[in-house]
Length: 162
Image 1: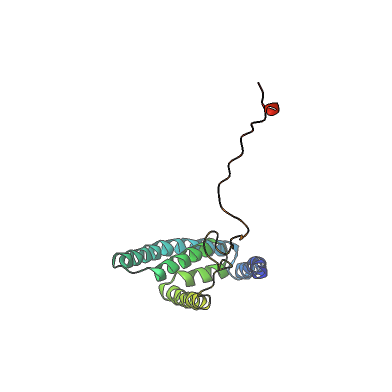
Image 2: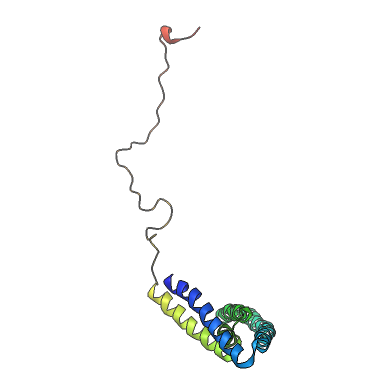
């Protein structure tokens, strides 16, 4: 949680510093034009790479395989596209890394390896529900005797309403 807080504070500050430095070097209008150009290129690259990844996932499903790599690459494409739409050069650089096929596949392969390691380390973990289904773990109370009970009929005249 602390990492996310620092990330949401640090990234905008770094972006502002970089934008100011670039603006001082090439001018404010050129900086704005460059930010808009990277967003435009990023959107087109996202569209092209997204369709290619979707096509590969579709091919894998038709051949009876699970498209896990393609699904993870799709998530990385979405994150990369969001970073490219965020104004700034640092987020654009990270976004382009996630959109380029060879770097995206590298990140996806590394993440898949981490997921496999995590799943092996947690194999058999039940998350606190080790006893299983409904009612499991509850012992029967031995003092309960099952049977039927019939209430006696009140035959006393004083209790009857006439």
